Picture 1: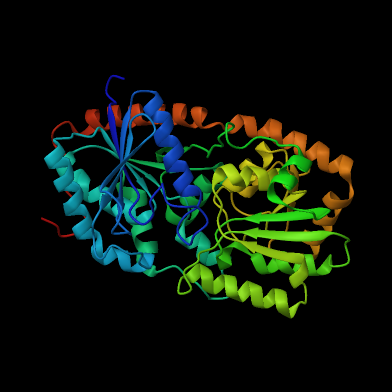
Picture 2: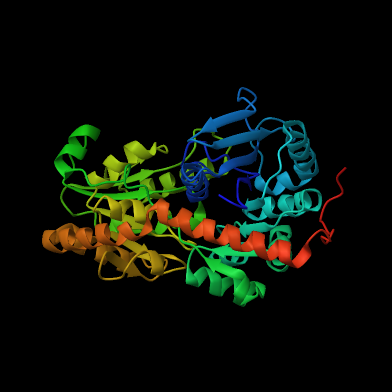
Length: 427
């Protein structure tokens, strides 16, 4: 493709090939991996730079037809709290530069994912003289508003850098129109600078499987299954879902399956998992709730198909990729009416949206879908039709159009006289 041959993606804090369901692995990882796969099918090479978190991993891991993950050593080869990664970014930046120099690679564009990656991309831009596209995936200000009890606040550094990046990168991306509006309202982003490109779903993985076959495969015997899939994090609102299940405790054969979490006892998600388990015991519904670690996507398909309904009780979601996955499998949804979920899930058509934090309303809609088989089937079919609008091939087509536009605008605007501003001292 003329003008677009090689893209550098930056994902500092999380590797797109890491197992899903942990504290720092979720929809962003899926987005990066699926987009890189699709770009490769269009003969565009993609290198994804991420921090090395395990000493036994090779530096370069190829996947798809033309994509590679480049593990960059910055600090010890172990997970860190995201707020500590800032101190290792100068080392990360220098190692990325050195890799590109040794490989004699010239990239056409930098695509940064998450706020930490945006700071890295702006520094690399000084040397590489290519445009930067920033996709935040979530916004710190919105997360803080969702956690209004004062707990789990985002670091002020994140809020400051997000604000700086809004005005300093060449292009911004949002997953929904709501996300774009939030960037304009809370960060003063220039409207014309924000492109809306949704997330996608892989129909070769997420597809309907007959419920009885899915349950037999998983060894599930319960009559009525409510499913939760996601990171175990306070912002996911699991306590609201647990309280809703407590309200429905007399429902025969009811089971809540919670998929997500880490085996690391010291991790933040494990601490939240223990808090939720304690609430389950306090409410005396331990026989109604099962906890499973994160699952491979190929296995998740069976859980979505086995479930009667997917619950998304989040306090904040920028998009809600699990909703698309469930809809592609024909499973209706009950979700909080927050953020991008109001776009991702057609209310009263593919599921129901309820007030955030309202366990009673959540229980009411769950009960409706568990008891009304005809309604459950109809909403599931509607969701399958809706999910077909979000295939990754369509997402990649939109991204490529944006890439080429941004490259052309950048070259026309700057030529060889590029602005040399940055946020780190690195040599």
